Image 1 (cartoon, helix red, strand yellow):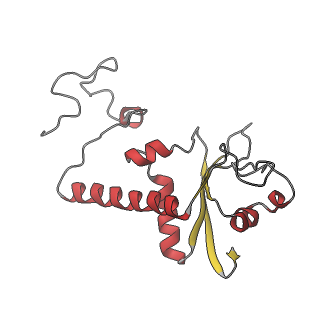
Image 2 (cartoon, helix red, strand yellow):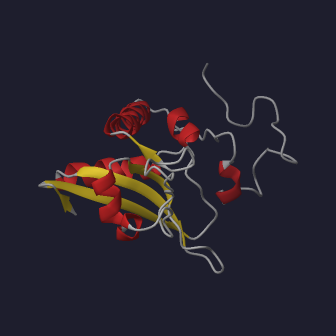
Image 3 (cartoon, one colour):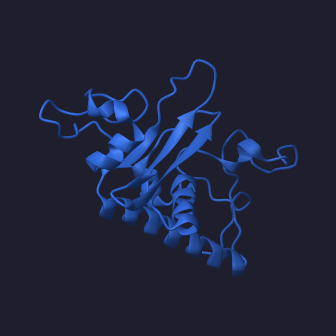
Length: 174
């Protein structure tokens, strides 16, 4: 979309599983997929990021985006014109107070905060690529997931009953 002569892009990552926008996980560097997509879209189009969102697509899911939008009225209104006449969006995580300001529950951020998230994703991705190029390709589960869930080698793995067998699982050179 173009607003006041500036180009904007909205990034939506459709998810068939359960997913939610987690700023803390992004800051920790454990959930970088959405901001990496947004950074790539920004670089490919030369547009500013108007928002980055997750959208559940499973049966029974509400079709409401979860994420963060640029907290500028004209940009938000371009993403959901209904916000020009009502206080709550049916599709965006945005709600307005009676005075027209964004409520504390709204998923909005400043241009600086969005750029901070994108730069963090770029930096962390660069660090991960550098580590891989140096041969560090270990599985490092984040605080909520384990790579074992998707691993095809469960039958021969020395991990037992969800516990780490000393010196055998996720060995490190540290």
